[in-house]
Length: 504
Ligand SMILES: [Zn+2]
Image (cartoon, rainbow, N blue to C red; front, top):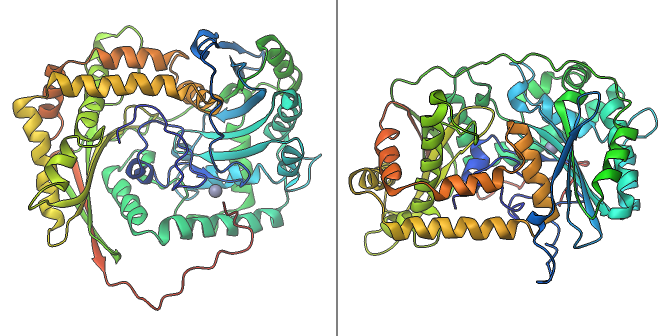
């Protein structure tokens, strides 16, 4: 499915809550295991609070944003339909801010935030949140790191106090670090090393990108984890966990003035520090096709095609410099939805149905925006007796067909109607509202980006979709990765999780 907003936490990826858009499974894998989750107590999305028809739509309740004197952003989204609240702390730092040799440190640090402060013992944070009747989790992606709790609204002050304490004073000893590092390494083994498609995407990222930090996996290379020291994590914390690089998002049954008072009380005293300058590390233009093959024990072959495409960097009035790129990013998102946005869409019909079908499954996704460069992904699993190369050709033919013949108004209307419905549904969950607002803040986008995005997408024409299909899908910006399945050893024992790896 092509999504323009973060989907609900997928049940097949426990503890994976992608905070950036476009997350079908393949894009989650592409993003390097994507959001890696830590705590166990909030593995699934809270049940959506169903709104009685007589209540005002949550979008009618104004979102407020303000800044504390130390530079920290506070965003409040009141939604009074249920007596619950989300407290979510976002730090604008993720795997892309790491440097070679310490890949994975953003995620390791996320784990360490649960390991104490001068006032809290390791694990005490989670015990207190549970005692308050709350559930919690945390995630690390390429672009950001986040921590959240869902609690009865009257407990908001307690969790804000806890969160501010660890943001300002996270502290633990070297032994605690060594133990947790083993947990993280086990997480890597389970999520990546035991999963051929995850390994394929890790290799794909490392091939697609050369200068961009997106080339490294979020979980980190194993040799970097082996060599990581407690001081690596402490230095990363010192450098990036500064008020001006963070936002607190509170959504639910709360009063903005009260949230402001609490934020000033608990986060306000944290001393202001400068956010370190970031180097651009821009990816040089690709000038020729790249191909990789990956062999691993697996049931089926798999092929994925990654095309470099422009990302959306603004929803505001366009400047001439980025107007074309932004318009194209939106049109590419519509293209992806026309290919794979609903059951029976083009890829399904052309590749997986009927006599002589070439694939068991086929998909498409567009990375609409992010702090780094974006990709348009096509992928497929060959049907019995078909090859990855046949699937690759069939996928590319579907793009070529759009470039030649365009798309129909009825296809466009179908995907647009679906998005509008999705916007409304999304607001049923305060968790989704908090995630969306935090995600926009990370990207430097305005808080009403959801509405603006829908408005912009509705304006995309069939002609624009045809044009981008012709513009971005040549060989020169393409990387193809093929998984060649090897025999599976039936006697191989499944990996036994080590103690300490939290299971859902
Ligand atoms: Zn983790």
